[in-house]
Image (cartoon, rainbow, N blue to C red; front, side, top):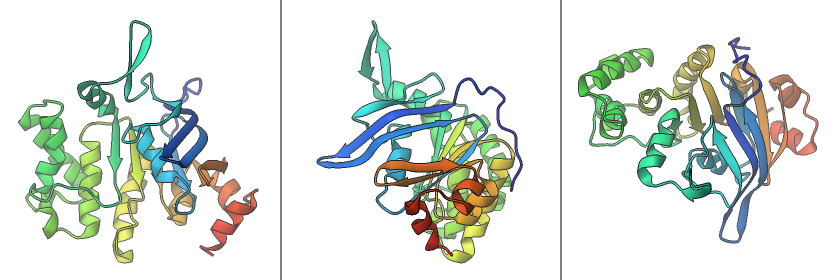
Length: 263
């Protein structure tokens, strides 16, 4: 298992989800999620399709609005602000500022096809957060070097393999200097031979102490890199614990049935 440091500040979690409910019309997708994540932890979320994993991830940075409960990242309830003692939905400018500490990597890469790798990485720092272009580009080159793609700075997404596109997407998430990165099934759209190069970058982030919540079916990555594994089913957290506890000695029948598909 990868060894890395978790913040000793155990009194206050970086991410706190309390009784989170989310519905789409009459379909209740999240049914009371409670989860805390400490700074420096890597949390891997497993579960069958339709269990609510990706929806929960999208609720953390307010890509989806919850109907009940609360999610805080640090001291901020993302998507909301308090004025005169009352809670209001945050305007877009405030939401953008709140999201600056949260990077996200999507299943389908979501790169702008008309922008180069370098331009994709600098888009948010320059366009949203008003950084100087020279500073943003200098850091982008550093990030491209970090993910092994400095030589592809001027390539467009169509000129990159799926694995390369996803590594650019990770660099883009890092460009805003986040304290938390959310990964939504980052390897599921890749050909099998390209999965390893993306997981290698993610393992490096884990070693460096980046706080990560990873929705994935990569059991090997969960065993090696996770501090905790969370198993979701039917919109609820069925069990959570160390990789040894959940993946090797699961307590719940639903967890065992899910894992048997990978044996």
